[in-house]
Image (tube, rainbow, N blue to C red; front, side, top):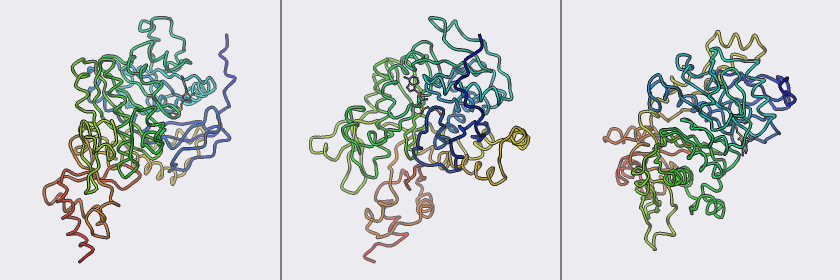
Length: 451
Ligand SMILES: C[S@@+](CC[C@H](N)C(=O)[O-])C[C@H]1O[C@@H](n2cnc3c(N)ncnc32)[C@H](O)[C@@H]1O
């Protein structure tokens, strides 16, 4: 029987994300190269270009896992599921952009409830196939019942409730990218993971995560927030806290690899391991952020009654990133993995991609931006540090103005401390220098306001 392609809206117009050709609906405007913020959703098959940097980082992390064997043993396959894949740009990017030498180890499943989105995924993948043909058979031995889906050119496509797909077979890599909050999917995602696995979660309900919507934060995340300079970091830690405690309930522990507040969403990527002892230890990494009189904060396991008003939590107070993995996410690496070669670009143009040299320059700039500051901050973000908002420094130090960030870093480095900018829409930095040192250095650079 011929496959039902009634949702195929035709090729629409072509766009390129990373080095993958993407078919946008004819009525979706050509994205700018620097889309920001939540996009207006215009119906099934709408692609949110503002999520491109998160998809780019996902490609880099998966390539890194295969190259450095930190998730599955060398030569073993990696089973990856995008549980809410929509038109499948992420899975198609995994298939197109992970270096060829690793493709044969990758088994990719794409799932979504939306039939029209899946028809578009299959049509785009057929019209613009990956350069390496991967001939995986359907792994029906891994499913308790016959899997409802079809193999399409190296992608196994399923139309299911994500919670069912997540529970039906064990995946080593799961991506959860829902509209809004991921809470409804977390239990199923954690339970469905294999013994050692990797979970990437997006949450766009930033009002709830930061605490600017206190009741949603309390309902969904069981947390209380304070909307100040630390709200972005709190949002990341509240989501990590929920993932850690959910994992612990299923005898698993987490190790964060990358966790970012990326404008209108939070995205966290964690290793998840089955370990009763590790799960029991999770409370050591849960706590509260208590604001201090000097404008900074300290983490505590339990705030005292007097501290509760100045405290946000419960949240994850452990390390946020993996030093080595995040340290390899450099701008050179992203261009090497995700930017098309001249011949790939030529081939894309030959099938109708309208892409000027300026487009290519902007696209490369955007790729670099998606990992900007990550490698440099990797060491500090994986150990104890203090976070500062640049705009708070003048008040904290009584200087009336802030020094240039580069000058401050140079002075702190000179004094033997580490300091680095954090990837965030706001100018944040982290350092291991003690508070008096940061204040003295700020004063030395810009003078105190009473000078
Ligand atoms: C934000 S979109 C995913 C975007 C996609 N990951 C990407 O990068 O382009 C969320 C998707 O979740 C799907 N969805 C919502 N609830 C679902 C459920 N219970 N099971 C499966 N898919 C669901 C929607 O159809 C939608 O396509």
